[in-house]
Amino acid sequence: MSKVYTKIKEFLLGEGIECFSAIKAENVSVINERIMPENAKSCVMFFIPYYTGKHQNRNVSLYSVSLDYHLYIKELSAKFDGDGEHYFKFFADTSPINERRAAIDACLGFIGQNGLLFSEKYGSYIFIGTLLTDAVFDEDEYAAGGEKKSCKKCGLCRKNCAFLRGERDYCLSELSQRKNVTDEELEIIHSQKLVWGCDACQEICPHNKDVEITPIEFFHRDLLEKIDADMIENMSKDEFSKRAYAWRGKKTLLRNLGKE
Image (cartoon, rainbow, N blue to C red; front, side, top):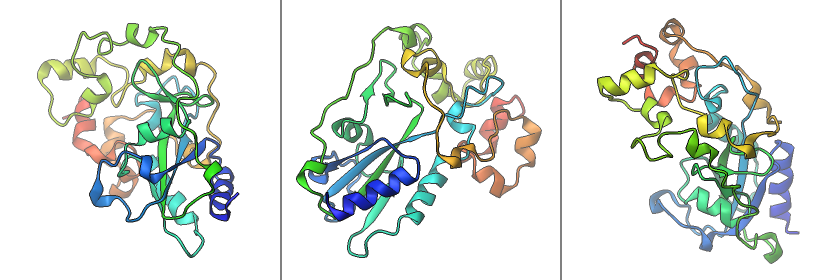
């Protein structure tokens, strides 16, 4: 096993990241040439599990109960000290490549009928991480490609979601994050339990029935499962910036909470 891949493997495992695999950079689909590292040779795809429990009383989507995962990827990048010879660039969401396609090509998971990416151990409660480097691994350290398993195609996610049934042209999660909504759309938001995001298609899915709690300590810090208007208004700029919904600003959240 190459020294570089061994170092990456030991680092990820030490961080509680068990689902990872490498593919050659020449085989990835680049969607943003501007931020694609020059001379990239290898791409390590990995799943970051975030599930911390059902949080039945929450009014925000499960992924946003924890601190913003973008902060975690920054922590991860800062911890990895490399080898002094190659560059190592971490991404999550802001990756220059098609992460979902690369994760599948790296044999990490499969796409469900709800369009989400699933891992066998953590279901769809995962974020996709990317590590690009100009280091070359041993040939047998690259994945052969293809989905590890497939969706049960039971149709439960479709039955539980009007968007997936084709009865509306938006997902509730997407609607709750819109900056501008109609009065009718606002009524829909106010009729829902969650004021940010939606977990309907995930919670009904049999692949998510017995998922494990994330072993990553970061996602257990400062859990905030229920928010209200006073809480959001009184959050300092620093406190608010650490939440996953901060990118949209307080105004949208306050609107969803019924206080505009």
